[in-house]
Image (tube, rainbow, N blue to C red; front, top):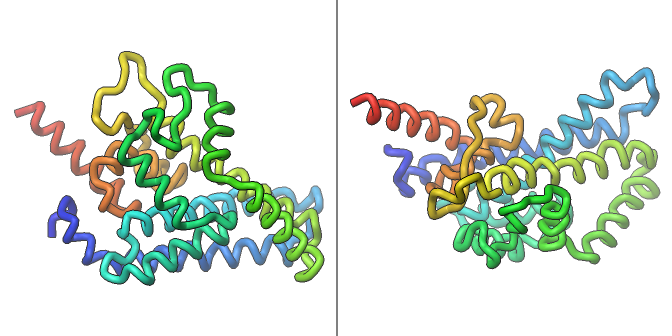
Length: 254
């Protein structure tokens, strides 16, 4: 079945569910290992730093999983389970409200890189940190900060994780993943290029190979393709982009 057809996504529901559950399960395993099994000492740095990066990557995966749910590409035939997994993923990510994210994300798709886009901030002369803080204030609330503080205390005082472990393996990767998502999913794709935007989505894609695109942000950097074909799940974007590039190359040669 042709991947460009929305109907074709219905064939992917179990693959999408499998990937979503794999991300959530791996996140739980890696987080549990960091919180309760690792002793934070200088001599363990060779293991601590890679584990932090893995947990950060899996935090990002939680959000990407919810993002697919927002586009109904996680389980297209089962909206209840599609949304339940999406709600769960963003809640454990940082106590986000799934309905709020859903509303604002579709506003982003309707009016990308405009003043009506909640993700957008001063794209012509983009200051990275100013844009990042604007981006975060659109989505984070004081109640979330209070809630995350309570989660920190719960992991420390109730479950018995050492505070340094909670900071290094829970708080730090969660914060770092917001920079990963912002950098590769908003800042780089939507900042205005020299000469201005050249497409209706006001977005462009990176030129990374598929393995690097996956590591940077689960192919979220193939952002023009995502806006053009929002019904394609993240794990199909790399293959679809390559197919498009080959097709365009053949057209130029013919």
